[in-house]
Image 1: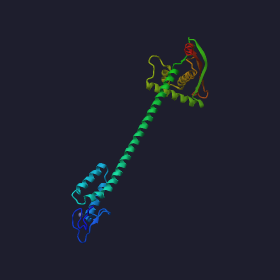
Image 2: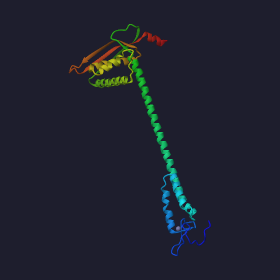
Image 3: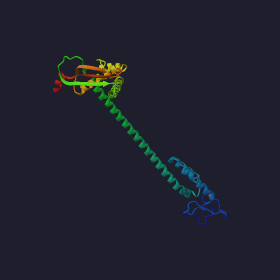
Image 4: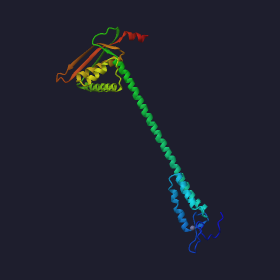
Length: 274
Ligand SMILES: [Zn+2]
């Protein structure tokens, strides 16, 4: 760069240096001299660049500086002075933007994962409900009679259940009541009651909820008896009987035993063989 030797005026504002004031360097390893006033003005503008919050903001600040010094003889020097600061700010802004983008992507990924988990959970819940419904249907379809049935059947064997509101059996009993009450609630909410035929399990069950422990025990025992028959592959229970033993020490406690014979109808056995 051609700079006049023995420079005697400020390259920026053109003011002549007096005998008490000599020029100063804006950039240490460059020869150009400017006055102290210009130097501090240029340095103070540096914060406008350093505080830029976006690339657009930075471009705007640089444009303002360029316009301000466009006619100055020190234009190149000044722009060279600002350049490393502008580059530094630009780098930081880009890094921040990159980080922000990355954070946003991670956030979105986490949201997607959460949604997927919720969907799977919901699906598993629906599947479980469906299985429960089918099982309930099958158990509900088991016929219980205190007499015999006219169709031919094969005897599978006896089924038995006991419930009591006393001692170690009482927790089982109250668990069963809550379980069936919950099941009845689900059935009712899901509208899974057949309108074409009476559903003893539901009708009697719903009615018994508001009744005393004997009625509840009768309902729960019948359902439990049907459940046992279902697991044995039976279609029906014939000759069902029940016994209630009252606790002599107060009558509020009882033991209910229920039993019957699980059978499989011949027509079903034959269809299984076919
Ligand atoms: Zn000057």
